[in-house]
Image 1 (tube, rainbow, N blue to C red):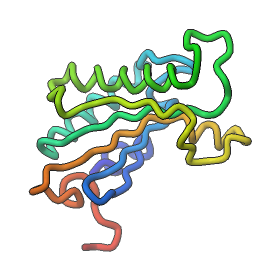
Image 2 (image 1 turned 120 degrees about the vertical axis):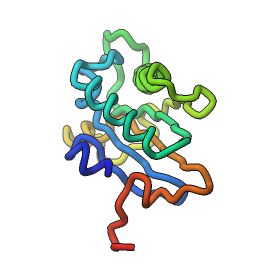
Image 3 (image 1 turned 135 degrees about the vertical axis):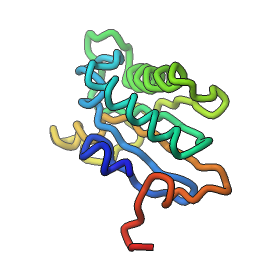
Image 4 (image 1 turned 60 degrees about the vertical axis):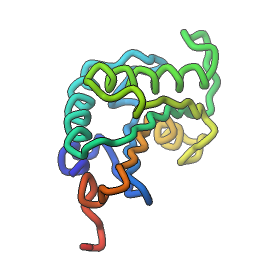
Length: 152
């Protein structure tokens, strides 16, 4: 469902107890900024509605950066930037009525890269926000948000 609705803007990966949603920073933020860009509002509004369809989910909003140090920017470190970005997405969800006890934000800065920081493409892949969605025990995450790839 996520991949159908967001056509490349959000990547969904099934997990044991839910789904991991990855959103590239360019979809949400301008360079070195933690203010949601205009296109982000549309994407996050649709995502919030989709998550509501899934029921009473728990959401961990995780901010990630590349390994380049911050230089002369608003943020003292990648930790600060990643935290501010995760907090911006968390505030957006809370403003859409998500239960504060079921949403939290985390900064991982550059400690969990998914690609080589030695290339521009790798750094771009590492700059992301991930939403780790956990479903109530009685829900089946494969049915809720992600169509299984093996046809089960």
